[in-house]
Length: 172
Image (tube, rainbow, N blue to C red; front, side):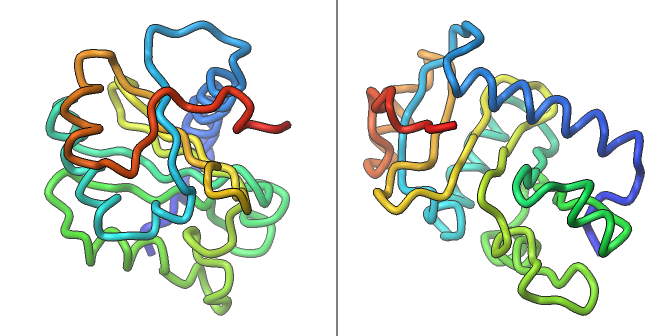
């Protein structure tokens, strides 16, 4: 299993993911720019390729896919004794990425991190960029936050990323 079992590691990663949530809600200022996309794209090979490019650019060895809803403590940890926090390593193939998001946490394939999630964050160790997603029927629930220097090359390589993002795409 690749899910996080260490309480201390999980606590720190969940705190960092919560910070991303607040930045995305525009309650915290940042120099990063926000691009929007269909949150379902996070389960595609193209998105896995985007993550690999971002990991190379930021010189991170890994990022974490962190489920925030359903509640990682009161739901996932309660039933599976681990947290829905999945590492994404630089160099992972698209198949490896997709397999890890579809991994059965233990006797319940429907609770895979990429399936049973309504809000999630993808965050590299450096925090130089991040993704915050909320399931949205209007195909705009995904937000990629990155530095201005990456905007042109990222939108050229991944034209499904929309800039500027609609400020009203996050609803709490």
